[in-house]
Length: 71
Image (cartoon, rainbow, N blue to C red; front, side):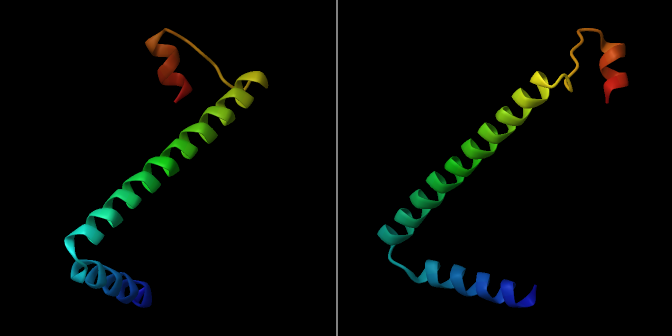
């Protein structure tokens, strides 16, 4: 873990030393990458829930007591 921290610190220091325009570009790239990753996670969760629904593993209820029991 210590090696990873050192690498991370080096990366951060390197980024901080870049010109503002380059740092802004890195920021934009990271934001898009994070958004894409989250979209992929959401899509995977959706597909998993669809499969669970089709196989009958999902249960639905509008009653609070029933929902609490499902947890």
